Length: 279
Image (cartoon, rainbow, N blue to C red):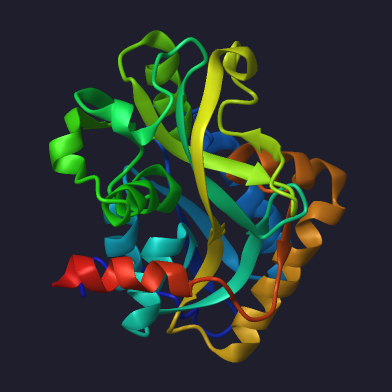
């Protein structure tokens, strides 16, 4: 294609790669930090890595599928779609609070009268993105499995573009219920959620229900990269949190404290959603 970024460098030149990331609306702009991150990766790998932002998961998926991005930070559902088509291979999975998985959480305001799923009838729902596992797909699938059709249950459903914006919509009263992510201990105790770092979030939000565990985001490489190139990138990503400065940057950009390599597990719960969407 004429608009594809070449991933093959000429003799004596650094190989040029594009690392794509979806910017979530209403969240903190990360362009400058993302540029610093790709510069560091370039120094570690010997590739010339350029950052590129997409405005949605749909656009991010299209960039990878068409070869306009060679690396991408992918949420689990987008990764599964591309992996099913043999477009990508995962390099590392994200780790938050020492875990490589998270839970979906349905949240309400702390002073909300909503105490059960039955009380959601006629409410307004805030979702992240159509391809957000915790912020849309899993909560709605869980409601349907419990006998509550989201189309009949909610008076209004809106996409807000980021977990931060969903929390804000619930706190402000623009939405009665929101779908987002949470981290739980193995015993089921809440560690933190998307609302934790937001001012007034811990006191102002109550968790109505959690579902999971859901596998975390991954950094994936386009299928055009060979095993040696993927290994260089993997080793650099694994080393990133060991650098104090880069560790801070990756936490700000990805919300991840570290990366893990090895086989992916836990994705089976999401494969059914992919199949349902394709019908």
